[in-house]
Length: 407
Image (cartoon, rainbow, N blue to C red; front, side, top):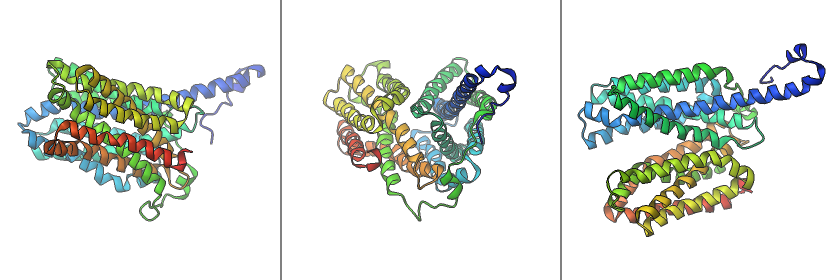
């Protein structure tokens, strides 16, 4: 079934203009579909950034210690882990369009729950549900990203993940605005929910309803019975990238404070430059893939990640380390969009299940990387732990060069 019915044009346009008008109308519609998909990614990132921006306030409201907060925060990834075994099958059976719309709506609703919490267990339950529905949203939205990419001849996947990063900035800025007006986390979350609801309301008609042939034929497919080795290796590549990314989120500020000895507000310089570089790199990713190919971009990205970590270790000074964190941001920006697109186009496994496998493995890197840094730093030093993580970039380059799927 065509995405759009152009037959009405023949009734209102001269024959000489019909062909050109068909082409223009089709391209215009496809661009609108692309925008709708990008806004799904934006909405998903906006929800997470909104919650993260008010963590300190919720900590103060509930009178939580650092240890208590750290324990409660594990409820969010735990919810994601519980959903992972069956989220791909649900998306395959009911369609990524339906689950993306419903999942984002429920994700936004659950964002409000931490704002309602008056006790530890209520916060834990709210974060569990936030993570649970977040996983369904993540798989369905990324599946939509793969399907939308298939409608275009040029690479566009990077811009979708760039929208997620852009939402991180937007969510943080809204958080600062809410703090300036001294609005409570609950009211802030309700405002953010309204924004996400409007995104859904104005774009749901353009979210494509599509199932690939393998999706239609293999809804009952079980990855655990018939594991695909290529997907496992793609997951390992993403694991290395997401571990590096998670370390930047959690440890960049600490590194600038304890190793670089950055004065005052400059402590956040490393994190800020990393985020700007990562967001910019994701919007540039499509251009680089189109010009040089996915394999060269991934190999180079791995080398850049390692170069960034080792520059930070060998030159622990403000300016070199700032440049180093920018390199890490640019390196990790390309990996997930490219790998998710490759995994989503696997001919043997339904798109949603393939993405579930890869994202599950990569998520472990995001979850386990930062704590491991802490343990290694406790036994040795933070510089030494960064040097160990620097190996991940080289591992990305090596695996990409060996996998035949990138030939």
